[in-house]
Picture 1 (cartoon, rainbow, N blue to C red):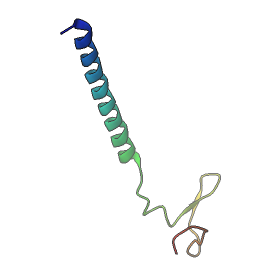
Picture 2: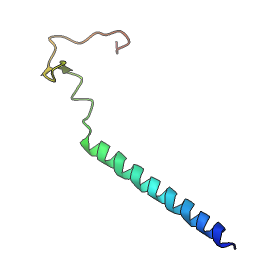
Picture 3: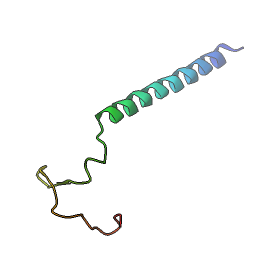
Amino acid sequence: MNLKTVLLIVLVLFASTAIFFTLGISVQTAYQNGESSDGLQNFVQMCNGTEVEPNRLLDTPGGPT
């Protein structure tokens, strides 16, 4: 085989492996840092970052009924 062809194949394999591991690390980090949406449904976050609990169930357009 031609040297350029071998180098191109090695480069493609290296790039695909690097992309696979980079995405895996970022998804794993996001999963570990993320919060479950179950605990967040009872709270509303105000514009200053304060979380408050509503007095009754939230009824919004397009929300669950």
